[in-house]
Image (tube, rainbow, N blue to C red; front, side):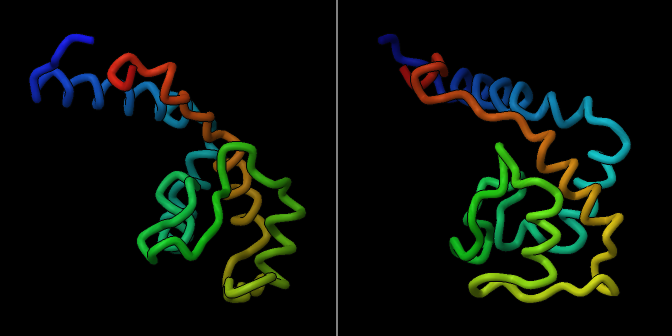
Length: 121
């Protein structure tokens, strides 16, 4: 294993991040609206910026992506939540917004495992 400079490590990390988010950048209109809504409604506060779980609240929300739940399951959880998640009525988060958020979550690709990332080998 060869040593890398700090700049090289940063460059590789940036490239890895760009590759991970490339699928999101190529998403359709529903997925793009869903991303804005996901961030706008504050879902990322508990579930992380790309649905990875944990969020800024210290780990309160479970992982939502990749392998997102179907729309009906997400809608059901918002309307009749299980656990500590607050309830979001249709007046607060309309069904059409939930559909776009669901499309966004389904569009998030799985990340690479540690053994697939050169920098981590």
